[in-house]
Every structure is written in C-alpha cells, then in structure tokens.
Image (cartoon, rainbow, N blue to C red; front, side, top):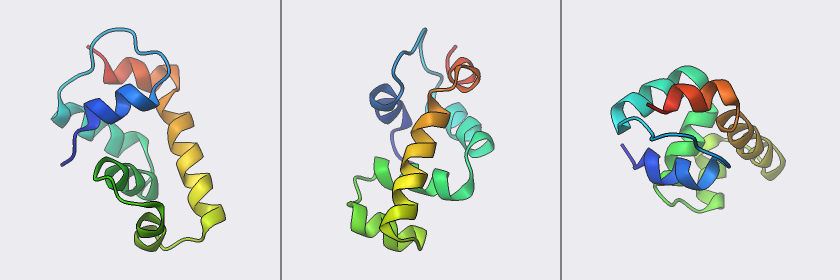
Length: 86
C-alpha cells in the first residue's frame, strides 16, 4: 500500500484537522471511490506515468482524464474530507 497521506495532502485543497492513519484512509477510499478511481489513485501514489496508468486502467486518454478529474473532485467533497480526518 502506498502513502495515501502524502498524496491526499497534495490533492485535497483544504484539510481541516489531521488525516487518519493509512489503513483507515485506505478503507474509506475503498468505500468512496469506484474501482477504477481507486486503482488510479494507487498508481498515482506509486508514481506511475500516465501511459502506464492508461494501460492498467484499460482506457484511452479522454477516459483517463475523466477518471483523474472525478477522483480529485470526490476527494475534495466535504463529506469525504470529514471522514478522512480525525
């Protein structure tokens, strides 16, 4: 499992409070994100390049951009941010 905390710090615009531990974050994200979004996020944490991510997610560039955008939008929803923090 990658380091969700570091990546979430970069992707969430405004975090109020402290993020939970890695295991709890992984469980929350697994519940809140689709399988493709979760796979994208894990690849992002692993520093995979976009071409590799597209291949792994079995999608073209347009669909990849949609997955990427949707994942960030979801992570910035107040409800999810509240769940991720202590």
